[in-house]
Image (tube, rainbow, N blue to C red; front, top):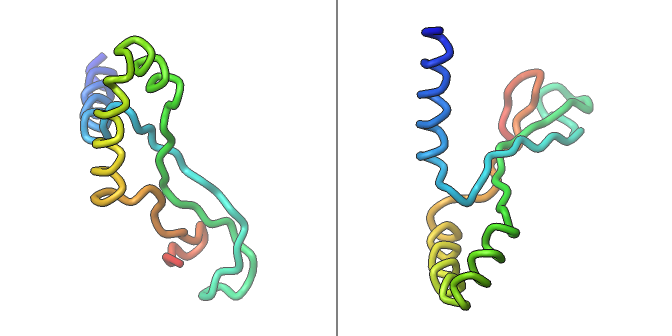
Amino acid sequence: MLNCCKWAKVGLKQITQQGVDMASKVEQKMMVCPNEGRPTLHYRNTKQMSWLVHLVLILISGGLWLIIWAMIALYHAFTKPIGGKWHCSQCGLGV
């Protein structure tokens, strides 16, 4: 029971740090690793936006949410990168 509560607090902390409208996602891709010299699986953290939620909010607010959403999108575009570096799953090298 204690471990369950601990994980719930960690999950809540991650949600509040990431924001409401962006969800974390891990992308995977086969690439040639410069360190290994062979094709390996690479991964990176990225974000995915829920377009449906924003569309519903725009319709409910009569277009007012579009202005707020544009300001939030500009803020995220300049301060938070959408995709990070690709990392090799074998050696951990960032490409």
